[in-house]
Amino acid sequence: MTFIITTPLYYVNDKPHLGSVYTTIICDSIARYKRLRGEKVIFITGVDEHGLKIQRTALNNGVSPKEHCDTISDIFKNNWLEWNISFNKFIRTTSQEHEKVVHEFYEKVKASNDIYMGEQKGWYCVGCEEFKDNPDNSPSYKCPIHKKNLEWKNETNLFFRLSKYQAAIEELIQDQEFIEPKERRNEIINFVSKGLKDFSISRTNLDWGIRVPDHLNHTFYVWFDALLGYVSAISSGDSNYSLDLSIKSGWPASLHIIGKDILRFHAIYWPAMLISAGMKPPKKIFGHGFLTREGQKMGKSLGNILDPEILLNKYGQESVRWYLLKDISLGSDGDFQDRRFVDIINNDLANTIGNLLNRTISMSCKWFNNQTPSISEKNNNEIITLANNSIKNYLNYFDNYKIDKATNEILNFAINVNLYLNKKEPWSLIKDDNNINDVKLIIYNVLEATRIIGILIKPILPEFSNKILAQLGENDIANKNWEESLKWGLLPESNKLQKPIPIINKLDYE
Ligand code: MSP
Image (cartoon, rainbow, N blue to C red; front, side, top):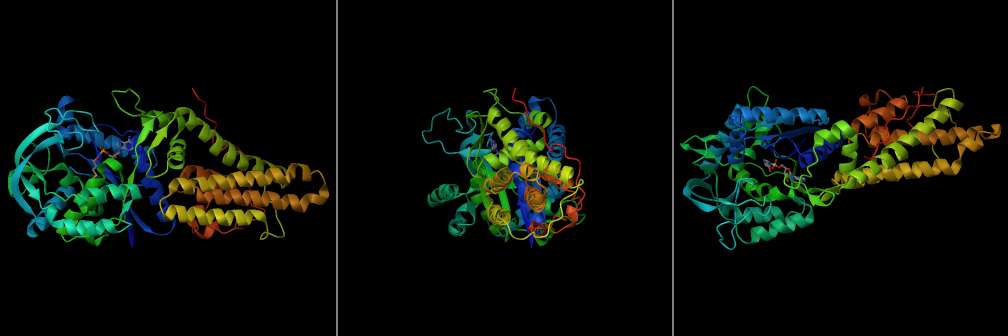
């Protein structure tokens, strides 16, 4: 079975911000984890390029929408490469491949008698690309997310019969596995219980979109178009790309990771559209929280936007990955605090893990001829129990997408190994020749523990992991079965160690 994981397809109104980096890093760590567990993974990301918001942004920048989209899409793709994102597919909704799939999908929905022409009147938020309820009918009702005035629209549009799928959606969201976290699921259950209304899937006063084949003065509503990017991505790059090929190649998606603001589209509209087209709904939607900065919502008007490029160049991508994955519980809102960021990286990566490795390799190099010690008995000591418990917890957390807990499990293990080393004091024991076997065992145990840390940390910090393992002389790790390599005692004796150099430098707080 193929594990298909997706990020949202990001609007190209601007280059990536820290929120988009956050979602993409989460998906990347899960994709890497699943691959290490031996699953075939298709990791999809990409960009959402049509719609009024993008058309207006291009116009404001004095370029054509196509030019604008080309520029920003390239920036997204290149950014993800810089962030070491291991995506398999990058879909652009302006590609021919995608357009074909949208047309094929539309025909299926039409064949289910789920499309009709109707009047669309209402208040529209261009930022959300969504009609909003206006409880008080005031003329200048603002979008609660974008804080901008809504625009009144009155058009003849094509509609999708969402209301027909009330029972199907109710059944789907009853499944505890379908929407996570629980609080978000409750919001959706509450919304659906009020009754689902049909929604318009085309626009007449908008050129920048995919033309509706049988109504050429209409373009598809940007969400009806973009959600299908998850499907078109699968067969993109194949000369026979099509809706059917995408379905055969692995649909449904196993996991859509998105921000909480776009949960309705994914948990209600999208499954209904798919069921209408005779396709399976995705298996799980995970709505993560929002990132704030020093307690405040990030926004251009507040002038507190954290440019991910600056963070990347200043601190390196893996420091940012560690902070975001370790410090924020997936599903909750999270705050980016500069001081906390620097402290966490210095404490966790430089001191607790980096220094543990560095000082133990130094001792081993000095006392055992630049090698791991040879020992007589590997299998009976307190560190093994700690390691096995941490591994068990870590796997369980990761399997349930509790990435922060999995990450903290690695850190806690490293803290315990440091305590063990400090308690055993091999630097005192070595002074007496009679203690040599004890010292060998202590050093072996700690080095073996750092090997386990290096393996566990691989989906979270792939480069940091390689550095740990390289110093231990474990260079061909990529050729080994990851799960097997978590077994205690696999670090060879008399293994040639690398010269101990710090694997991460401490950060300065400015
Ligand atoms: N184009 C749509 C998604 C279509 S998916 C078929 C879209 N794009 S977006 O670029 O506006 O948002 C992408 C994601 O970024 C959303 O999941 C949104 O929740 C997330 N975030 C936007 N601001 C954020 C933060 N401040 N923090 C975390 N995520 C945030 O919506």
